[in-house]
Length: 280
Ligand code: SAM
Image (cartoon, rainbow, N blue to C red; front, side):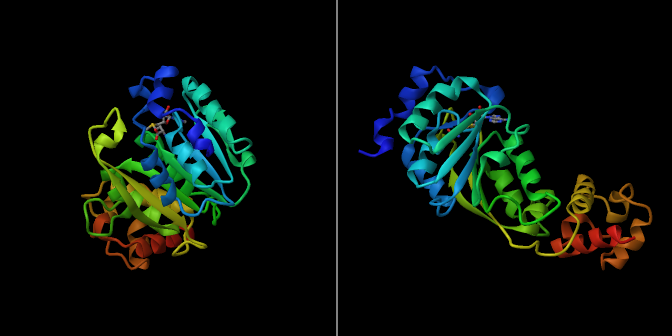
């Protein structure tokens, strides 16, 4: 019997530990272990990897990651009520699951992880987007992780993989595609979750590139794209006015027409603009 067979079904875990879903914590649980194993497989070959999981909840995806062979899972969960359920999983997989009870936005997981590291999460979307941006914008590259396998609202997933000229193209597309390969790996209907959310979801898989696609300073590029897309209907010379003095000259030097709008500008051109600003 494998370790996973000794653990009770997730519906029973939720009933035993009274894990009624809390909206304030964005709790929409995955209870089908075939599905959580399928999501875990999207993260690539986990054998020999430490996996950082954010928001394990009752542990459906955690079980998937462990059964798919992760060397170790480090799980960060804010909800104290989930700790006993996660403890049961830790006992079924001795030495392979470490759980920290706290806010993932405030915990530095690095001292608990040994490379190579992959990250997997089914998180509330606001926390997911914030962590994604942090993971993509450290000053130095490559980062501590090899890949990110993250559940998002379908609409957010589409923003991550969007191309110039589309409505979905913006800060998330630029920051994701600058230093990683990003693709939608799996789509999930609301009914895959308990309770079902209002909209469809998708799993996005990002693989860190050895080097950014084009050179640029992460902080400057972030600032430029945030300003450019904050006022996406405005011409760039107006949208970027507050970023630095003489923005029109920088735009021209980077080969961008100051009258263009952010939506039309390629990743390469945004990186050229960030370099112009840095070197001015
Ligand atoms: N991974 C589980 C699953 O797939 O069934 C639970 C997913 S549920 C969408 C999101 C989980 O993230 C919840 O367990 C919630 O308590 C947890 N969570 C929410 N905000 C968090 C934060 N800031 N840090 C860590 N965990 C958080």
